[in-house]
Image (cartoon, rainbow, N blue to C red):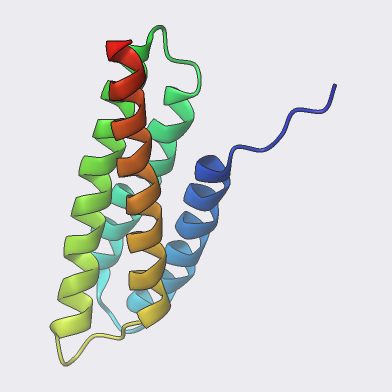
Length: 118
């Protein structure tokens, strides 16, 4: 039996890879602090989503996805700084991607909570 790939897992990996590439650009421009912060927060999103795939319970699953959401919000913060700072590079598609990932994750939490109440 072939296991189907989980879309949120795939999206989190793809997004992290885009941020890794973007952080290389930041580092080339000497923007090391934000590059490092971005790398930490974005990789934590995917790590927590992966961890949630083997949660011990629905409550544990929701908790892990919520941690991933906190990291997603932190990642948004660093991207907003890059977007608004005149001396920083910025890629609009990263903003689009993180918003899409966030919508999926918020929907997962919402649906999981509804299913938990049944």
